[in-house]
Image (cartoon, rainbow, N blue to C red):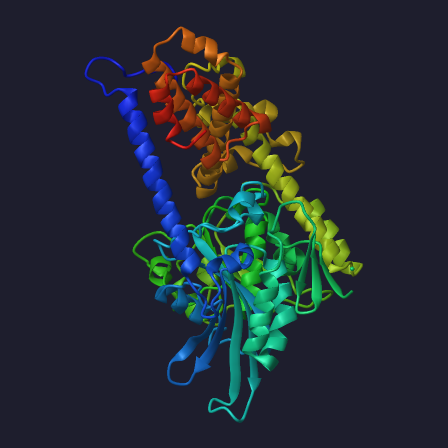
Length: 587
C-alpha cells in the first residue's frame, strides 16, 4: 500500500476530512492533557513555596539525595529525602535502606564508598522537564542514563560513639541518579559527605542548591561544576579535574585475576551468570562495574548489581534453584551467598583490593566442586573453557609493569586499550555484515513506504568471517566461530542488534523524508484530487511528528523545508479545508 498516495479511499472507507477533524480533536485533547500534567508538576511544592521547575537542573543530574540512618528498633531507615518533593515508592525506599549499608558481616569501620543499582518501580511517570532526554541520544552507550534502573552512590560512615545505645554512629549519604557516572559521583560525595556529617541538613540543602545551578550534562563539553566552594572540572580558584566521569580503576579491580582477564571478558560478552564474592561493598561494586566496562564500547544488556543483599526485592528471583541462573552479574559480601549461589556456573572470589602499587597474589581457576561453603580461598571457580587462546603478550606487559612499579592508572590504560581492541575486533565483522542488510539508497522512493532491512541470517554472517573476520585486526587465535555462535544466542547480541536495527530503520525514514523534500509537491497536487491532497498533508504531518518524536537523523534544513511544503499545499486548498488542516496546529 502506498504511504503517501491516495490509499484506502474506495467506497465505504472514511474520508480524509473526517480523519482531519478527528486528528485535530485528538491533537487538542492531547495538548490539554499535556498542559494539565505540566500544571500539576508546576504546582507540586517542595515545602518552601518553590515549584518543581525550580529543580529542573538538579533533575538532569540526580533524582534525589537520601540520608539513611540506623534506628535501634526499626533498623535501617530513610531519615531525609531531598528535595522533599522527590518521589520514591515504598519498595524503592526499602531497597535503598538495605543497599546503603554494608552487610552485617562486613566490618567497615571508618568511611566506605560504594555503588549499587536497583530496578525502579513500574508505572513511574517520566519527568516532563528532564533536560537530559534531549542530550541522551548523542551519548556513547556507557554514558547513557538507565531507563529502568536507579544507581545509588553511597558514602557510609561507621565510627565508635559511646553516647549512642549501639555504641556506633552509622549513617549513609546516598545520591540516587539514573546516570552511570561512577567516578564523578564518588568524587562529589568525597567533597560533601564528610562536611555533611559535621553540619547536617542545612549543608545538604546548600549542596543541592549548588547542583541545581549546574549546566546540563551535554556530551562533548567541558563543564565547570561548583559544589560547596570547590569547582569540579569534568572532562583550575580550587579545582578538582576529572579526566573521566564513569570509569573505575580497571587494573586495581582486575589485578588479582589479570591472568584470566580474557576469559572474564568472554563470560561478560556472552552474558553468562557471574557472582563476585568480595569482603566489602567497595570491592564488590568496583569489580562488578569493571567487568561490565570491559566489553565497552559494546553495551552490557543484561542486569548487573554492583552490590546485592539478601534483602533485595529480586533476591528470590535471582537465587532460585528451580531454573537455570539468570544472565546477571551480582556483587555480594555476605558468606550466606556462598551456599545460596554455589549452583551458579561462574564465581569470582576476591580478597581485599590492595592500594595502588601493591599487587595481590594471582588467583587460580578452580573447578566449582572445590568451592567450600564458607571459607573458600580467592579464585575463579568455573568449568568454562575459553574459546580464544590466552594472549600472553598482554600478560607479560602487565607483569613487567608490576615489576617496574608502573602506576595503576598507566596499567589501567594498557588494560582498557587491550579490552577495547579485543571488543572492536569482535564487533567490526558484525557491524560490517549488518551494514550490508541496509537497502540501497536508490531503492528509496518518496511515493512508497521506506524499504525494509534484510533479515540477519547467522549462516550467511558466518560465511563472511573467512575473509573479513577478526583475524584482520586481532593477533589472538582460537575458536572465533564458536564464540560468535554462542554470542548470537546471548542477551548482549539481542540488545545490540535491536539497537542497530532501530538506528538503521530511523536512517531509512530520514532518507525517505529527505527524498520527499526534493519532490515538487505543488506540481503533484495539480494532478490529484482535493481528497488525495488532504490525505497527503495529514501523512506529511505524521512524518514531521515521527521525525520529532523519534529524533530521526535528518539534515537540519529538511524539517523546515517539509513544513514549507505543507504550508504551501494547504494555502493551495479552498478556505474551508485550510481551516480544518490548520486546526491540527502542526504547521
